[in-house]
Amino acid sequence: MSRTIDARTVGWWWREIARRFGRAKLVFGHGTHDAREEAAWLVCHVLGIWFADLGSELSRPVEDSEARRLERFASHRIATRAPLAYLLHEAWLGGHRFYVDRRVIVPRSHIAELLPDGLRPWVARRGPKHVLDLCTGSGCLAILAALAFPGARVDASDISSAALAVARRNVAAYRLGTRVRVIRSDLFSALRANRYDLILCNPPYVPSQEMRALPAEYRAEPRVALAAGSDGLNYVRRLLFEAGDHLTPGGTLIVEIGANRSALARAMPSVPFTWLATTSGESLVFALRREELAFGAPGPRRSDRLRRRRTAH
Image (cartoon, rainbow, N blue to C red; front, side, top):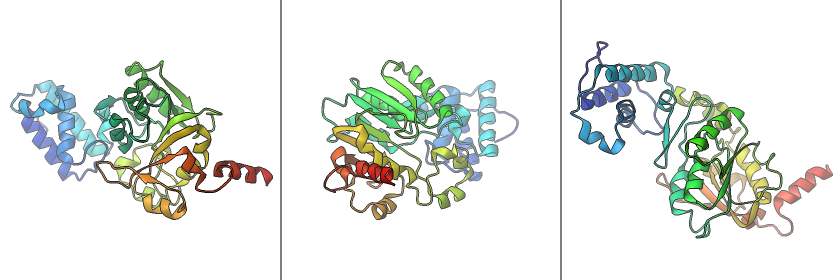
């Protein structure tokens, strides 16, 4: 792309930015899969084109001011390796737009694609009355849950106060302040005796060794939203031990764990996980009923026994 800004067509800029992104060997995965998709996102954002209409706009001339903005964003993306979502302050999930910045991980949860169908048969046709989105980050899953279940009240919690500021901004943008409550909590620590029909969680799940090898685009995200100990299961273990105490009878826990299915099976072989189908396969998201969180043992739930054992010591 010439440093002398040339007000050419939409199609020319799309092709040229894609070529530059590919040549720079950028890493994608924050809402796009390759250089062509990312270039399309940038062009549509700057030129105010809806994604579905890009093909019909390819011959449209690009004005000088628009060309300068395209050049600036493209050059910044290459120079900094920051995710494009941070540069544009937008991310898309489940067909909805969310504000993002460096205080939050860029939304990309596979749970989002399960919500439009109401998570059947895991959730009753009438829908849950009370939903919890743990590790909410930007608040995207909490908002999508509120939209999927119009009769539900949703709690959106996160340990990061900075992330919750972003979540509040998104909740306000969707005018859901009366139904979505934002709470600072380290998993369940601040939720006291609250009970939920549905708990959603996309927790940190990147193992230590993988954290050290992450490309710059992923290192730009908050470490607290990614790092999860040597095997990537630090938060999932806590979640499974404590979630039963916060689910209503028959309530459901839905958790995304990335590529950690094998590690989870080795760590907890007796837990009857049900793996849900997503566009990326059936090894990323699992479901458990409250009753299954007893891990098949007689007597009190394992979380209760564990708490008593700790108290005894």
